[in-house]
Amino acid sequence: MPGDSDCTIAQFHVKIKSSYRHPREEIQVTKIIDARYERSLWQKSIKNIFPSMPRSLRTRHVILARINRTRKLRNRVFHYEPIWHFEDFEKRHDEILETIMWISPDVETLVRSKDRFQEIFLRNPN
Image 1 (tube, rainbow, N blue to C red):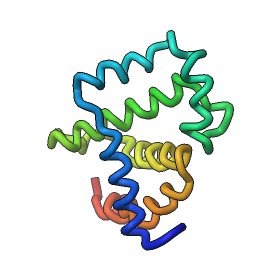
Image 2: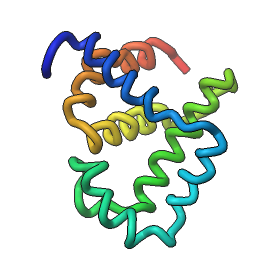
Image 3: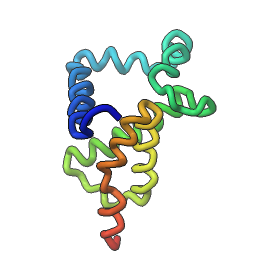
Image 4: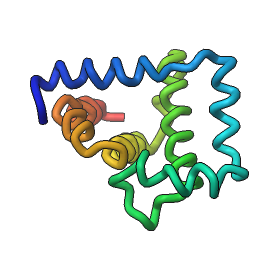
């Protein structure tokens, strides 16, 4: 992996931040999720966006289900809502890492090198 990993994290973070859309623009982005764009957008772009995703899983439905589960967890955490009742933390964590790997194996390796989920999760008896 090129350069210092902290620098790479910062560069990745900047890339994500620079793709931010104003809420009014988000309406337009969500419209492309619609099934009407299955052939014109999804089938043509999915391999480029998720180059390491297994072909058998490479569908709009699989991707949207995965991203929506992650989004719901993220929203709960960022809005300080309780998440302790989730019984599938490990599964969700694995899904997030796998999704990152589908996009970029290098970034997934970087995230795993900084990841402390197992260490913290195993410390809690509940």
